[in-house]
Image 1 (cartoon, rainbow, N blue to C red):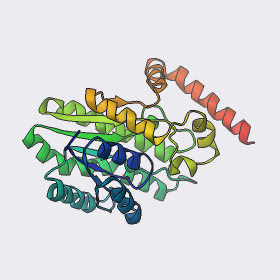
Image 2: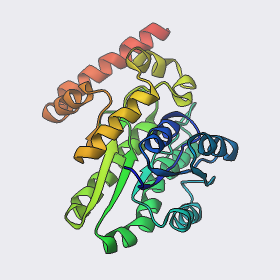
Image 3: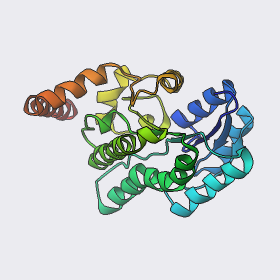
Image 4: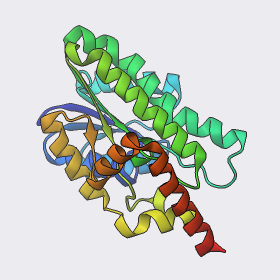
Length: 254
């Protein structure tokens, strides 16, 4: 990655910050994007990158971000579409709309801005943070589970459509990661994810390995691949198991 032009969204903390730090450490030139301007500037200053605060789910904001990267870095070699939300509380319409806008449409807006240039050049790489929830599900949070499925589906579609034209699309699908999002989660999230949660540095290391071999699924928790296969092979059995887990969690909270 030495010299590569990289954009990381949601990079003010958590996985995004770890990705920005790790990529900068191996010589990439990094644009740090986050809705929190102070956090973006702090990470950029720490890694010697460039801060471009803004909303990664807003089409105008994404256009400005990509334009900033082209002006500062001469282009975008890797776009890490990492920004995401896990709305807490009741799944009202606002929670669904926010999850859809951030967890799905941010990737759509990025692809629209990036693909014309990438296709003309015959190369480009998009890393979509889709979560293991996109491969499996997430009990206790319907908007998160559904929109992460959609994010994974869009990444699959892009890979199937453009792989022969030099576009590499990869999906990062961790389970629990020790981030502010996990810390702010509810009791069910903690019960399901805390025991096997990994650090953001471990996730970043897994991503760096995956950038070398172009694998589609980037899995910091390797066991997710087995569960994904079981889900596809026997969905009824898998759903019964998930429902038992739901019941166990409800019993524990009662």
